[in-house]
Length: 388
Image 1 (tube, rainbow, N blue to C red):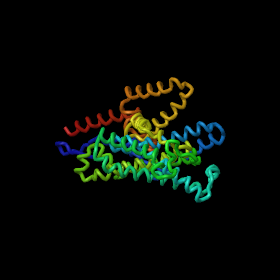
Image 2 (image 1 turned 90 degrees about the vertical axis):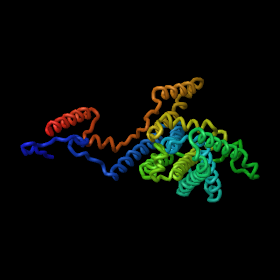
Image 3 (image 1 turned 120 degrees about the horizontal axis):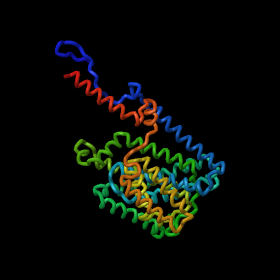
Image 4 (image 1 turned 135 degrees about the horizontal axis):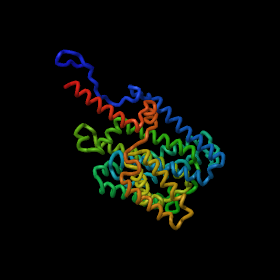
């Protein structure tokens, strides 16, 4: 860029521009490369985990804990849609989880008798069992999504404490229905207070890991789409979003239904992991437990939900040897985090491996930004002097 002075002579003008890395042009990874890097990373974790389980480095008990970690990750990231991204406060996630768990378990147990499949076939991993597993998760998720739609349309007209109360009431209604529906129908369906037994162990580290990866990918993709941006706009300012043409009722219901669907999928995995479903498990405290994971990790941060779900699932098991004090330690940890990090572990930050690789490619390191800012300030001063 050039500028003429009073005598008509041309003089160069140095202007400050946006950061372009150390090479002058900020290089970015193409989208297929980003997806390929994430897919390779997921595959590496999966292979390492399977090799450690097959080699005996991870015991059966530890493998079960890892399965529960994956289940709670799905619950946390799904609740994060309604709580972190939409900005609402539902307390009925345990109800959706129970609906999905019962729906998946009942479908699989009844189809096993129809198709002549035994529990042993799930261990050997026959193709029929694989299809049955996928079908069961879809049935459980759709049952939970239907309940989410039924409760979401009237409930999402409310806000704050009122929404929390009505979703909590819905969760308690679901629990009572599971307790008493057998006596109303006249035949065994949910098992009542004794619980639903005879559920095959169709949940394993492999399929839990795959489902977690798929769920996180789908939620991330949805939030990066125009639907996700509309949901975020409602969270930031619902009145402004509606004024700009966003159908707030539709998108609030969409977020609620998607959140319920994935909670139902997690419930289906939970049924195969535990082997017994009892209505008492899906009480008020289960919803609070899932909500604590979202708040602790950071509302609006998927990575935060993943880390907090992992930490809060493993911590009680790691402290099992100190049974008298483990709940005290658990509570103290939560209190300390809320005091010193009230916005959660990560706030609204989400980690991106592709972004880290791009910064390395462009040598855009934090310690070099101070020098870049100083160079930009000097360039602005030179430009001002030249214009004068």
